[in-house]
Amino acid sequence: MAGISALFVSARSLRAIGIAVWLVSALLFAGVFSLAVAFQGREAVRTNVAHGIADVQRLVSNVDKAFDELARSVTSPPCGTFYMRQLRRVAYLPDGLSEFFHVEDGKVICTLSAEHLETAHGIGPPDFVREGTAPTSFWLDRDLGFTGLSGMVGTIVQRGNFATVIPPEHITLALPPWIDAEAVVVSPAGRWWHRAGKERIHQDVLIAGTGIVWTDANGPAIRAMTCNDDRHYCISTRIYLANVAAYSPSLILLIVVFAALGASWVTRVVRGLIQRYWSFEARFLRNLNAQSLICAYQPILDMSTNRIAGCEVLVRWRDVDDSIVYPDAFLPIVARHDMMRRLTTLIVSRAATELGDRLPSGVLLQVNVNIFPSELDAAAIEAAFQPLRALSDRFVVALEIIESDALPLELVQSEIETLRRAGYRIYLDDFGTGYSTIRHVAALEIDGIKLDKAFAMAPDGTVMAEMLHHAVGMVRSAGRKVVVEGVETAARLAQLREKTDHVDFVQGYHISRPLDIDGFAAFLREQMPAAKTAARQAA
Image (tube, rainbow, N blue to C red; front, side):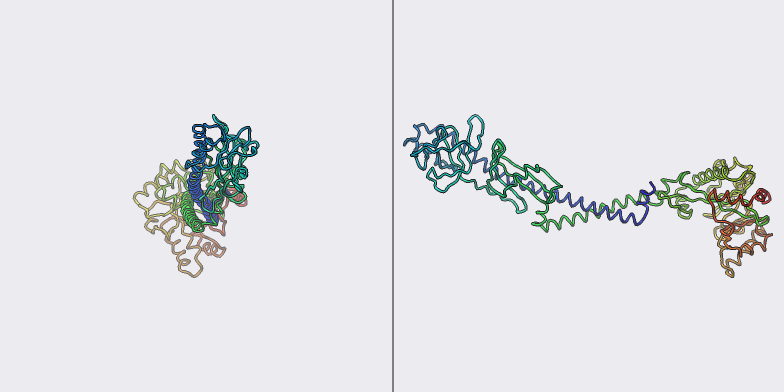
């Protein structure tokens, strides 16, 4: 889970996700726009094909009407003078049919052009028969020389003893060049004959099927087939999107532009959603719980005994990508969302469990926990600190008030007095750089002052380094204990030892870095047995 979460936390991963979203969106938009263009093209195909099919349908209708007229009006004996005269009257109709035969037993006896044939001409079995109330037989692409129409080829259609000739169909497929089309005549058995357009398109449509095919060898394609009412004339079409691109570069440019704009919009939306959901603040608020908190313990040295008197509980937070986040990053969020009390409750619960389970028995330690001034409610603190207070035979609780704003002395003082009576020790944290003044030190009934680490960490000879000793003197003159944090070197510790009567406790990397519970327990075992009495003497 942490590995997946890291994808949404890392700035580099977010950039990669943004690029991936843009590419996928661009492809999708391009596909949608291309599909829209293809569908529009298909509609244009349908319109044009419909005209072609309508022409074919009119021809078929004319043939049927001609046969109906022949059956009604040609009543003379076959092949006689009056018979031919009656045939000519039908041939003069404006239907495009001008050649008629008389057929008996599969043989042409006479034709309108050649009249009575010297020898009956057998036309053989038909290519297909259109069934119905009046079955109609078709012979496709036959030589009409026997009729006297030398050099002509046409389709012979027979119903009863009458036959007519359909001249070669000149089907005009007025389609854009990027559309492949073929007009065919189809028999009931499925055999077909090419009539116009590009050959083998009908075969391709039959094999691949109609509709959209994205896995075509030549790229995405749309195939369709439109037939007349009796499905003997069909026009099959195929559109390759690659052909559209080749013949319409401006259209492709338009698709690319729209796809890029659409992908940019989607990317902004997706990045916004990801950033809102996976922002540090959102992650922290969503995942602040006992499992995500980490407690670290920094030992506090008693200067009078040179033993460890206690520890300050420091909090860390484990992010969803397993990285460790320090308080300066999330405390502003805690304050902004009024979650200080919740955070303190989680810290105390975690610290009580770890300290109670892992530390050596028989050691009384002072446990310092930071609180905000807004948390100075004795009843609420007593409820939050109950897990530690239940271990009062092993731990003394000290509250370090973090000066996030000016202290309202009148309101704070009564709560401090109540807490001290209950057994808590009270310290002001970060004295010298926050809102505290010497007036706070004198006015508030507190146990001690923790000097800001800026004093101890200042280089020798600087103003801050010189002020360290003056600050210690002011605090001691108010009768409060002094804790100096930020002791990083042996030289600084030695300087503070020269004023042992002034500095009560120190902490810093020279004493020990903040330790996890196992490290702190091991550190304490190295200090035993003298550590068992150090905290009692400090009290």
